[in-house]
Length: 157
Image 1 (cartoon, one colour):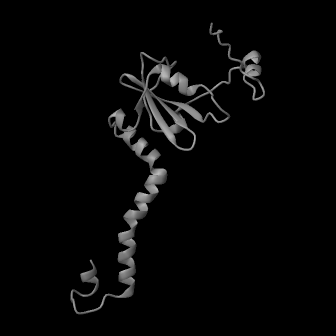
Image 2 (spheres, rainbow, N blue to C red; image 1 turned 180 degrees about the vertical axis):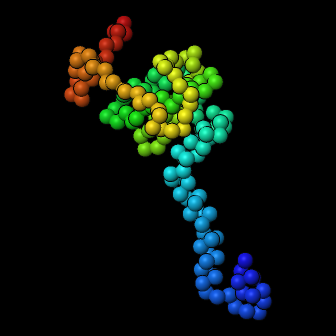
Image 3 (cartoon, rainbow, N blue to C red; image 1 turned 135 degrees about the vertical axis):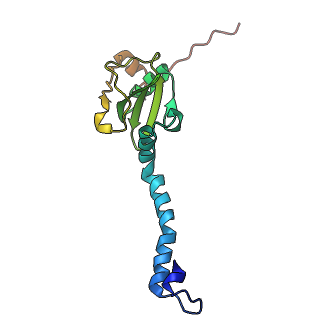
């Protein structure tokens, strides 16, 4: 391409605009790769779903029990959970906090009411409400910062 812009003669100097243009073209893949590292994970996941790629390429397989544990609120930030749909033997779930993690669970291990086909369109996903369970006041009092835990050891006789 540069040879043609120079008229095909190797003894002519390359114009500055062609040098800048060539360096921008050469740098573009680096910019694209950098951008895909930051925000491209979601795009890659969606592409894998659309092309019906193997689920292991975009979703981690976990047990139904593990999914229930992950959905339990453990702090102030629970993130957003969504049911993405089902394909073959699995249900798919998305968990978003700072990024997106996609999990797949065998249908036999986790029941979903009114399942629908797996879709990449998050506007069609079903949001899952995570409810905070009330804690037992006795347990809360027991583990407050100022509460002391007493250990009782049997006398060594």
